[in-house]
Length: 294
Image 1 (spheres, one colour):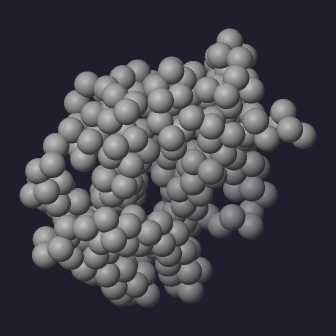
Image 2 (image 1 turned 90 degrees about the horizontal axis):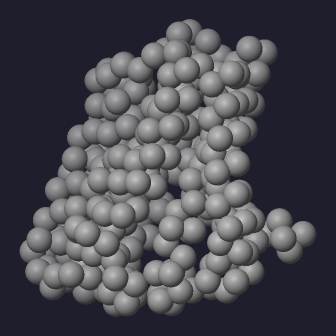
Image 3 (image 1 turned 90 degrees about the vertical axis):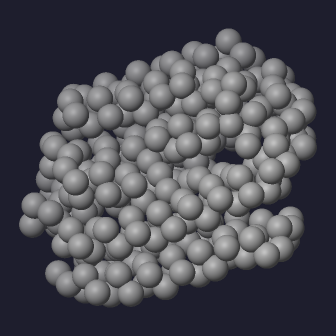
């Protein structure tokens, strides 16, 4: 059991669960776009294989990420207690787990879902490991770039249900993309000293320019508000959703804008906490809206 817990920690199970949830939303809405329902056997059959494939690809990518950043993780208070820095899992074992999980997940998606979903998942792994991860030590733009693989799961879910992606799927991608930037920038502000110790070039750890940091947080919070409304105008959702989405977006924007008048750790923590509240509420709204409207 202890070994299993260490493997789950290596695989960042919390992030993997978020990936599965956002992938499910894409899958669910993709089904609804075709007039299909989750209660149908074929839908559950597809979703179960999607669940397995996404779990293993996400877990594998996370394990490989921890292997790549093992030396830097040991320098940071936030990450020094991860399995590899503590020598609870050997680096070579982490590679084996990461590669095996990633390949197994991709094969499940390819053979039991479709080629497009497997390709999207492969792109997610490659951009996460070989673009975003090294960029964290090169440029502060890493947060924006890293939001791309983080926003791909709903696109993959949609592709699993429809074997295609269209503007509606890309709008879901846009919601996740815009959400991640204020979320991770606020996290980076809270742990800016820790990121400095690890040598990561997160924007708050390399500059004290409050205006630049505030601009990105507020800009992408505003973009999130408009993007979340976009799926309503594309007839993916109805008025129940859009009312709730606008309300949530305005609250998020209120918290983000507050740093213009008082840039403090307390304000930043409120942004971070509300970002955690915002996303699940928005996703629940989507499901409720589509259920109510048949």
